[in-house]
Length: 126
Image (spheres, rainbow, N blue to C red):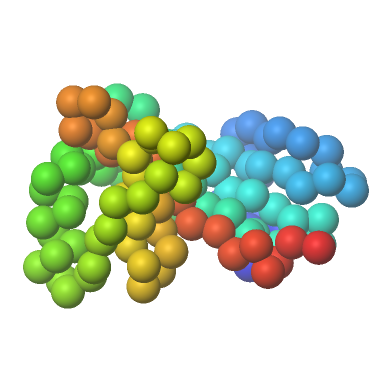
């Protein structure tokens, strides 16, 4: 998705990081973060729940979504035939869960609640 399509769908972001010209930039909408490449293409999508609810942009008309617990989410993925594997993609002792078919990565808090879920397509970066 191009930045212009993103603006048409979700409107202006609630917050940004990075430089709009030259460097990659992130746009934030509630608990949703989207990374834009220097070519203004979405290459990164992350959801970082705030507490026990996931809040997505109002224009998505979904309302707050209950943040899934680790056991519930992994069981639901397994029931759909999705393989899930433990991995440490960033820090050796920091455990994440990967869905190999999609490349989605998920982390959970110590008490088992979803902390972060994201995916990226680095081929869209220069």
